[in-house]
Image (cartoon, rainbow, N blue to C red):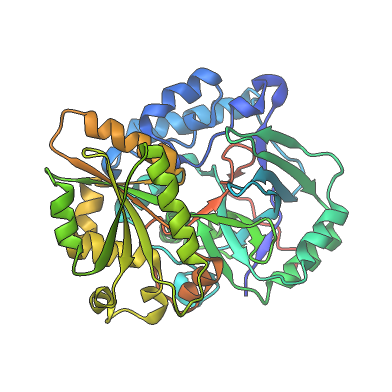
Length: 459
């Protein structure tokens, strides 16, 4: 079902920019606006100058914001700061990393162009909600620059590792780029130009569906851009560059594939004591306070207890959360009662089983009476994969002179099989339900959509 194609990727010229470690960045949506200056200070050619962060609150910026990026992109191309490959290729992307558990893992994937398909067609399957304000911002960036600066991270099923076996045998021996990110993860990118192998890989994907792991907004943006291009061009064809999106494709059976939890730091709009919070939650949760230790020890104990509960026999386990109130330095474990699921009885069973849905619908929307749109419009929820970073930020916000009450909710990870089940049923999870680790780095490779060119379908 899925169509993939090689493309002429663009990458940085190391002779011009120096160390790639200081040029590449994480995806734009995990970079705080306040951190932009530090990335540019590392290297004036930082990718953050092209793949700009979204405006605070998700609103669009002025036209000049996007035009400045387009002008800079053209300038770097003309100055040979950026180089476009002369031959279309598939790109093998590997990352070696240390899992939070201490295990050393390697995840393998391939970067390719993928033919766009509306979600209702069942070829590319989402699992998370998106926000129109974010899509609008990214659409203006794509429409102005005519470039895709970061890959969408998608999954496919390949129990026998057929694709990676083919690509590993045919890829270049030496990587075209290799960087070490701030977490110590080693990212390597290899070209693979063998036409016969490309055709075999294309044939493999013709019977496969793709599951978006990370990049729902970017994919929805590409769909919106294609609609624009169709309106502008009466002769729009399947081979048009705007009919494709750059993706990183990883087998869901890959032994190096990891999903981490995404913890939520809620900024309650007002003052809220822990006792009041307990009263609001008591109808839906059994609550146990964790005592006798520093906040770091309390958090470690909560995570340990949650992990124990997660690995119990399914008949005896319950959904658990940790909650930390930095203003009172109090930490609690929440054990979900059966009554909590009454708030979810209109949802499909595939969603009722998800911790993120219980948090979103039972705690945030139910007990705390904050609806989805208010949380987005007022930027009330911030997301963190690192619980220590989330706690540090909660403490900082607590000490700030404002009327908000920060509350840190600690989560268990969503499972890959849950992602597949939800997507197969055409359902969606709450925003930021998954954190596939490590993130694909922005700046190793990106795709330019050149008017008049056609995507090489090898048919």
